[in-house]
Image (cartoon, rainbow, N blue to C red; front, side, top):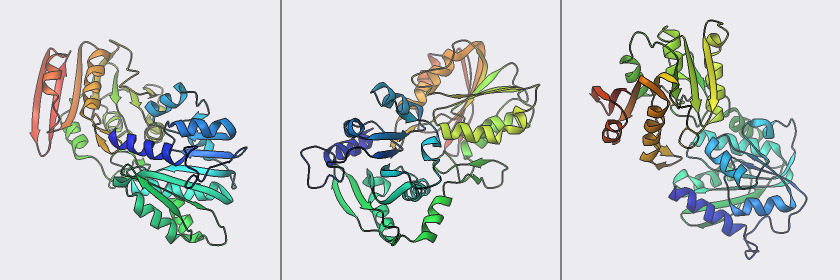
Length: 358
């Protein structure tokens, strides 16, 4: 969370009413402004007082935080982006840790931006902020910038006459879902293991039983690899897919479409932040999961621990958890306090497999 705090400090500094030299939004009123993907900062709240602010945020935890702080205009899907022609007077883009996703955001922001509109970009240095400023130079635009708190902000005015249209089209195309190597599954850039299947998830599949009886769930389902595996191999007849990223949920729906239409199966999807919202208690017979341990670019071991705690709470007595984790993650003691029995059938190659019973 330290990196996120640094970029928020930078954002609030640039947009401070006391900072008139480097504030590109100074005096702007009555304009249509988009933040993508928006995270809460006092400056966004200030901008919304005098302008029509739209916010795109597909991550449920950040979406909830924006809503709770009064930014009701936050949307979880691309609805704010579905304009067939330039619409916004200004767009604020937050850089993520994924290069492909960042180029798509920059390209689509330039498409949605009116001529002479302001494109403002910010992010931590570790996410390649300086490199993406150079990308705007490459597409034909001049920039101004400020760097502070190990982060960088830069901005430009869109000039249709100078834009490299072919490069713009290339950037926008990067936002399309793409087939994952050697699979029939597709994923959007920025999702976990979007380029190739995760070795740990493959390893977990190799240690699942031949049948998962009753009804269970895929916690942190991503684009649906684990769910697709148990359904396509008739290991399970139904499943509940949970993820905090709405993009992942939409990809999972697409990847599981052939099973959804089967009236003999029950498949549900839940856009939910399991770390704060949890799942219904004592309702599931089994859970499969490869829990996250990163919050954006920061490692956060507590995330996976919260997944373990929520899994124990959601399982019925006698319910089973099947989980893969990286070797260095400390789950053993926590699991001993929440499960009656724990097996570790594999440990090696950077991963460990847990099979635990409530």
